[in-house]
Image 1 (cartoon, helix red, strand yellow):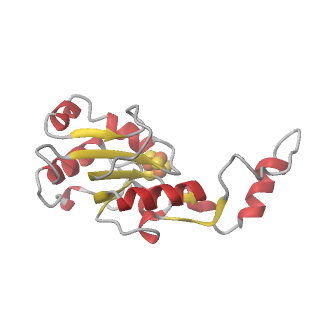
Image 2 (spheres, rainbow, N blue to C red):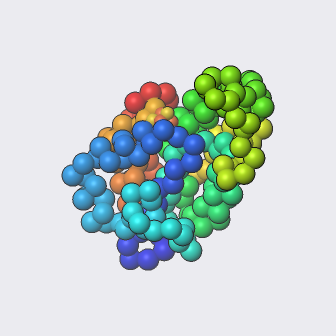
Image 3 (tube, rainbow, N blue to C red):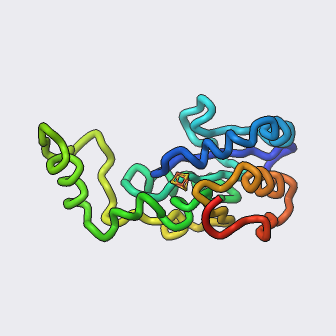
Length: 179
Ligand code: SF4
C-alpha cells in the first residue's frame, strides 16, 4: 500500500448504480472500512479528478462508450489493485445485450422507432457508443473479480476488508452469478 492509510476509490461506468447501492448497504460497516482506509474518489464523494495513485479501485459497469474507455484506461494507470465489481463489469451483463444488434440499430430504436417525436441520433455531447460493449478485463488488466448482480454488501465488505488488510479475498464465500 502507498502510505500509512490505504486509499480506496469507486468508479461508475455503464451500470445501473446497483453495485454502488450494494456498497452503501454495508451500512455501519462503512465506518469500519473508513477507520482503516480513505475513500479518495467516488460518485459518493465530491472530487472531480482521479488521484495520482489509488491503492484499490472498485469498478462498476461495462465499457460501452468512448468516455468509459478513456476513463477506465486512466483509472488503470493510476490504480494498484483494480477490482471488477459486479456482473456488468465482469461479463458486460445487461449493457452487453445490445451487442448482437449493432450500434446503428440500437440508436434508431431509441431515438426514432420508439419515440413520439423522432429525432436523429445525437452526433455530439453524448459520448459515442463503442461497436461492442465490453467487460472491463477485455480493455485493461483486472486484478480481482467480484461477480454478482449486484454482489451483496457482505461480499463487498469481506473483499475490501481483505484487500485493505493485504489478504487474498475469500472466494469460497462468493457465488459466480447473482448475489
Ligand atoms: S451488475 Fe447488476 S446491479 Fe451492478 S450495475 Fe450491473 S445491472 Fe446494476
